Image 1: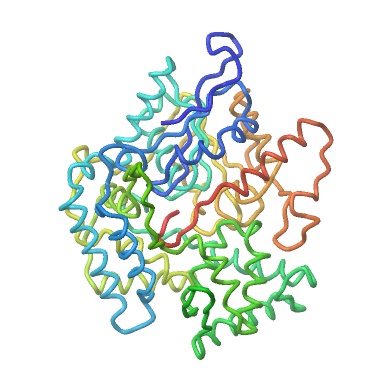
Image 2: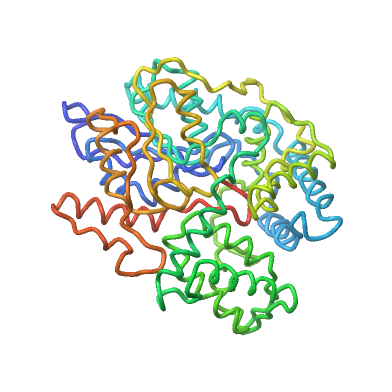
Length: 489
């Protein structure tokens, strides 16, 4: 756990207590989030709050951690095999390969991390959050959770409704679908977000590297690049770097870029134009941070084992109340998702990650996430074109008294874009307990391709607004939730 302390006397009247943060995943590190962005979050919510990041059980810096690879080289070699594996619709045997890889990982979890994996499901972490709150001398939780963090927050509200102080769930997951282990409702708005990318490119003239007169023509040009990689993959070689760029890689990176399109699309489309011209090096540089590294850090102090994608799998599978899978069911799951989105081939692998999962939680709890009344209303944030969490309206009906604020933007969670409207509402909620009016829709101050509109379309009318807008832009740049190389949301 890490704390960025309030700038007021914690024993004085101005102190407003701790706010706990969860970045999603599941398995994301709250310690990592707040160690990087704690001061900026405090600028947004106010100096009167402690800003607390915590790692949920079994992941990050907790002990014991769900870590099935005792040596870094073993982990990275596994990741390389994952990187080279086909998507499930690429070959006649790809689905079987995906299922076998999931079986192997769950066998490793059962053999090497069984003790930790029994105690990391969401309900247990809700109890941990209450313990953190009480350790600070408080009785009610103040919380801001993103993506999977909405499952955690809404589950807390269900289990401990009398302990809800201020609770923001941002990028809201369908908890019923999540606890059923189905992963079937996430992609409803994904392709709509991709079409918005193509439209903004068409509207941006030469500022978009793939500009065409219409969104349809931009889309056609994009898929022509992908088709060309099927016919002739682009090779890369320079100073110790060599590789082949396949259609699959571009497809996965596009899906990842939909999580933060206002920060990535302009550069990504420049990378695509280079690919169109046969130059793969910009693509390699663009994705270099996502690739496994086989370099050896032989420093004097060993790094703590903080786990990886297996922690996510263990949490997901502990939470799911149904783990019945076979080849026919998984094929049907993929086909149904593919009717909803062109990215169904990527997303369908999440459900398959629980194949052969044998570890069950000591405290079985799988919902339902339904609350008649919380001690204070929950605030839910919903982006209109969020690629993977479109269910704030459904969950608001399940959490009685909650209010949905809609941010008119693409990207995953509110931090995908800068919106003074959204974050003034969040600040008012935490500080004054004021909820936005039902049906509130907030515009943003960003554009994917036009630089003069990237945080610059709004002219701050006060020093407070200017500081807030600067903080939002820093949060948007620093906050990263994306799927490769292991799928997360």
